[in-house]
Image 1 (cartoon, rainbow, N blue to C red):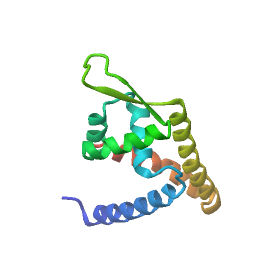
Image 2: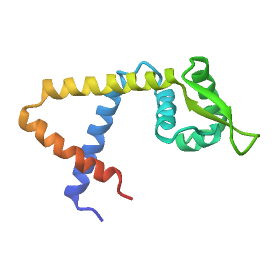
Image 3: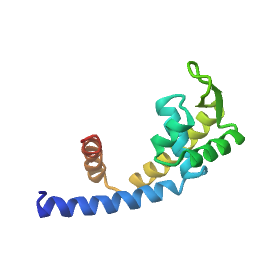
Image 4: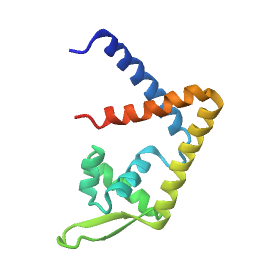
Length: 141
């Protein structure tokens, strides 16, 4: 059972991370669900629509609609599955990769400007050390 101090830190951290995530997401030009699909394809490579749905924790029908919208925008392409003729694989197009990089760049750009504008040099150093701690927490099972 966590101590009351750890629980208080956890509550404050969850709230602050939620606010920061929502603010950074305001920089997006592509809807969040579509950016998430592009990011999954970037991280994992080509995937079936069903695998994408599982990865994103949505219904396969919802993912099929999202993939359709991305295809209309030429952000993803579809090709035959190499071993199962009943399936197809969805993958990032060059335009999709460029759009995803632009989205990530806007997010990082806003956050970098906010860090420089709002935090002292000492606070920036603390934040840099904290990033490694947050990564460690995020990978804990």
